[in-house]
Image 1: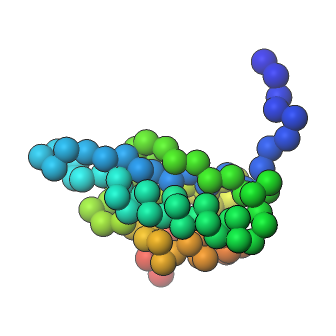
Image 2 (image 1 turned 45 degrees about the vertical axis):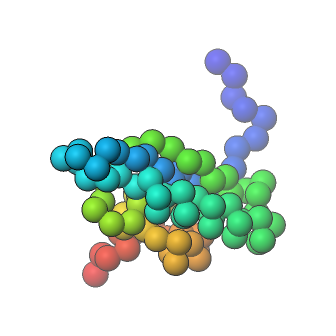
Length: 103
Ligand code: FES
């Protein structure tokens, strides 16, 4: 096993999983996940953070909201659900890490 020569300060995984409309698990994060992924990539590039903050599209993260998508932010953010492109600034903020709707 080899350790990589470097790793990002933050690694954000965006669920872009799509399910068939008949799935009992719901539609998945697909369309919104792809929009969030693209918005995060644009914002990270705009801020000059491409070396320190990696954005990766992924499959189901096990939460499967009925609206929005799920994002996992490591090492300090955990899972964030019902995410939309309007949440990009929040996801990249130092305070991100609690559920969007947590009191
Ligand atoms: S489909 Fe996105 S978390 Fe399951």
